[in-house]
Image (cartoon, rainbow, N blue to C red; front, side, top):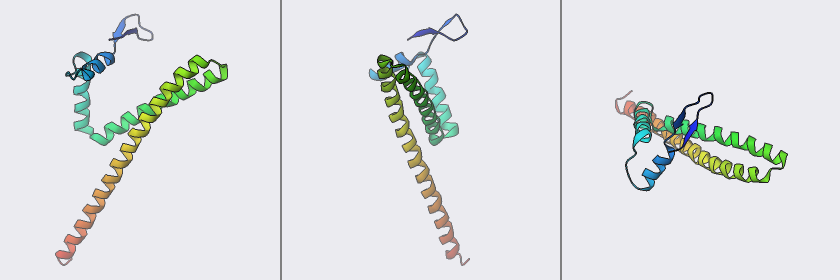
Length: 132
């Protein structure tokens, strides 16, 4: 787990991301902060649904990609190629991850629209069967 100082505070904090990746890679259940966050995600999934959770992730990935895009443009303007290479790699990963997340959102929304259309059709056909 990486410890860093929060802005404006002198005390270190642990984000838990590295430990979570190690647990996932080893096929172990998440522990510590990662386990707490997993429970939070499952609760959010239950209350808000899968699509809302994916929209949140897609939005965050896109926001982070946009920030890296701004940083890599500034690096290019300064001529700092080492920094530019680092930012391009991060931007590329975030951009692709956000595109995949938004594609999932689009697919889910299309399915939802198809389901609603099928429901409306079934209701209309049901009314015809009743003589209405």
